[in-house]
Amino acid sequence: MKISKHLLSKIKNKNKRLKPNKYKLLKRDKLRGKFKGNSFRPRLSVYRSNENIYAQIIDDRNIFRDPDVKTYRSKTVVSCSTLDRRIKLEVKNTRTCDASRLVGKRLAELCIEKKIFHVVFDRGPYLYHGRVKALADGARSGGLTF
Image 1: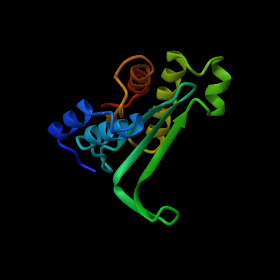
Image 2: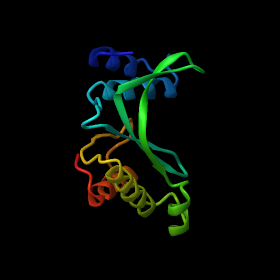
Image 3: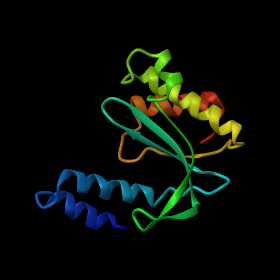
Image 4: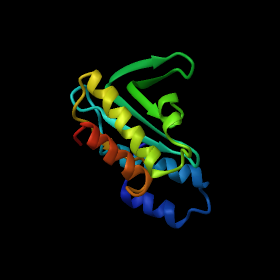
């Protein structure tokens, strides 16, 4: 669902009608329209929860039909999170920037194995600050270029 900046500001001002999750989805879709990943430069998408952080490399041009939901979805090439066994053994707390940095490095290693060197960074609705920035720095130090 594509939304113009004007309509988004109207909705933001009258957010009594919208639930917070709905507004978050609108904001994400507005940002996502700028970033498209392809096979040469896939999209590095970040999801941050209170406990963990998840990152995945997505090829938006390689689309398949999901039979469960009956919609078309982009192909996930590589994924990594703080729930991975390798990362859980190295850190005590998965909510820290150090854990996010390790996820970024591990993701970069997996990408280089698949011969992916350039990506487009998609932070989603999150600010480029804290754990999201640490993940990006870890991916850069691992060998990925944004």
